[in-house]
Length: 466
Image 1 (cartoon, rainbow, N blue to C red):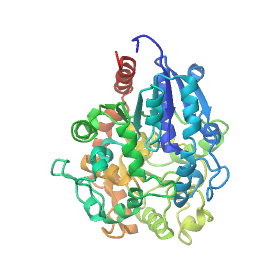
Image 2 (cartoon, rainbow, N blue to C red; image 1 turned 60 degrees about the vertical axis):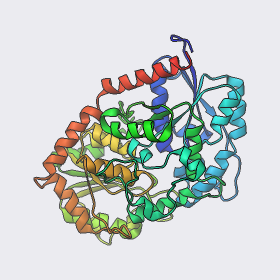
Image 3 (cartoon, one colour; image 1 turned 90 degrees about the vertical axis):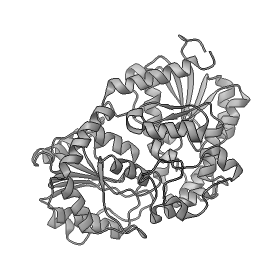
Image 4 (tube, rainbow, N blue to C red; image 1 turned 180 degrees about the vertical axis):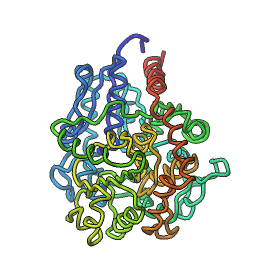
């Protein structure tokens, strides 16, 4: 591929906004360097993505592929945020119905690269058929990725882990000492992904096929944070190049659109609070917390005595209101202590406000990146998938404090919530975590550093095959 030629790059993420948004940020970075991007998703998902900056709108084209109807998948469900967790398997079945239209698009558009997600087990064979190199863009961090066996070992079945207990200790290829392991209750939640679902293909099979068929793996990470895990992936597990593209931190504020009055209301409340004392609470758009867990979180916030802003949203499929999940009388008792927002909340703006002193988070990788870009320390309550291992990584680096939970069932108490929050905000020990968060801003929020990662990635794509 010629050094100075623009490339036509196809970007095709999984149907989850936690995947689509990093793919879109990567697309913007490549478009800024002169490449043409075809960003593929479904019609409703494309409509819900943020508007492109005017200077990039001519370089990024959205390509709409329509999901086929699938039994048990609601009409108009096109993203994981549209369905409860138990229904995601049918979304994957519908997604596999995009194989043929995707092949037609590749044949007609003649791209230079296809960059796909973990779900696309059929994308590498299509790329090979039409002579297009393909790469897997992993939106998960290096620690989570390095926890799993080599996809080549998975093919043979040799030395693979098959029982939940085997995932509660660090794998043998991770140097000791290490805290990189699931707890019993965490791996039981995730274990279903190791077996087939309604789509007929397990998540692990998808993941491994996406790696084995790719020319390289691009990783949403950086050497400064996860150099040890990236080396393990390159040298011990993947057998193909692993290229960090940086953390893709948010470089723009949340667009307000017609919500300026809502933000002013939030900002006015934050402005009245003591600097560095507000607890920001948010668990993403898909977290399914039980009523008991919601009660313990709420009572823990109350018990802490700290002011809090809670972005309280219910996942898709929920038939209850956010308020009905809270303890009786909680909202009245805490009306002077907290701000409960059950609608839109601009996370980046809130995290950057000087009153916010800690983020109580589910450990979604994008949320962690946003928080540490703003040097905001973390209290960790991981809920599913990669989040437990993100929490172990952060705790090992003293960036976050994990709420104590029962090792077997994952339950936690209001006291453990309050103690963790007060440790970071009030106790002397919290100064270490605040200092570490400020230190991490030099990694997470350094635009020059992440531009350099993107420049290196750009050159790799241009020079491939030269």
